[in-house]
Image (cartoon, rainbow over all chains, first blue to last red):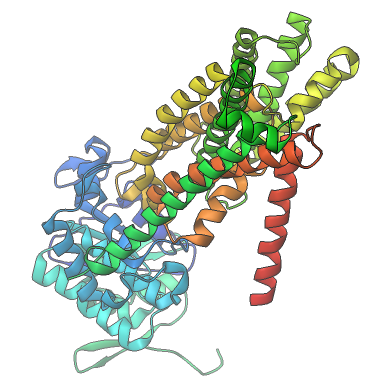
Length: 240
Length: 342
């Protein structure tokens, strides 16, 4: 259960959610996506309470990437096309703008080569990139991603980090992601640090590092080094 | 930019059309076979086709033709229901009877037989509609009981478990009633093993109407099933109303399977293996699956009907026993092939 949380997620900003296992990162993302009802309090999207949004309109505004997606027999193109469901609906055929959105999304994630491959025949990393493409294809103003770099090798993790930055800074999207990898999470613009007892702090990366929020959240010293403006987590290999 | 359009997609669509035409050609061949197989010899039946008289016309056009057409339609309903059930439950072992529809229909028929105090074989075509009604009511009641035992339709696993419990509960109730009324035991056995012997033009019409009424909304909702393959959270985030989608699709499963069971009894495996055959022979999304599975199911039950009349002619095997043999053999083949692939 997440208690006493009051935050604002800004457009054109990439916010990372970090914290130990079981602290509620995924729960928070699910609540923001409207998949988990809040027992008290309200979540607002563009000034309107989330439950007040019509279902499809909300789906056009919020794109969601689950922590793990089921393996399916759909082709890559069919999976990415589902990202346009809120725009197309049940019956309509894809228009040129939908095809263009899909193309842009698959180009951005480097997944165009798998358009006609069945999801079940792809590796974990390849599937993850197709699911990311599906999320991008929604062209929503809010992107909520739970562990977007799962199964990805380091070069592709870098690609995704660059992509999220571009979506936020270049396209004005409000990007929120939960990432276990602290070095990747610290590449964001802002951070929400959660601990076992609730919210530790939220603000800029500099504030988080100055306040040593990460050590408080993980209840163990967390060392972060600055490598020419890039914050990197330095694991402690010495015995405690 | 080729994302599902272009020459390869045209080839995929072409392949689907060829597959559909093959299924229809098989159905026509089986229909012809059904016209010439029966208590009379094949030579006699062929002679009737060439030179029909009043009696042979009744046999061919009032008995054998509606039987094979009805078998195709009932198989198509079961194939459609199976394809939907496997999509909704995201379980390749789901079949149309998962919500307890078969057990509910069997109980409905048992109670109607007790009420009518008549044997199954003796019912006229109008009374068949009465049995159908009882089967539909029983199947619908079983579905409602299954759904009410869960917290609505929000949890797939609860729905599955509840369906199994309801199936056992209603099945055992039916068995207890039949034990206490041995006079209807033979009739119920005929129903529980499946029979295409009582299909008439009126039942064929009913099956056709229900098939049209079921397949259209199912195909229209197929995109929802595609989204469900990615997980419930993802499907919900895309803008789908999961409870409404499940309710509508399970309603279609219930009506389709109840109508089929009401006309041909409890015929197993057709709804289970039809979607598998489509997926094994053709790579499809759900829209294509829900067109292919009925075609496949129809041909399967037609073939089973023909076999049931051919193997021990002039007697007949119960068609459900034949589908069980065919379906079971296919599943064994699938398991063997998968174990070989490792």
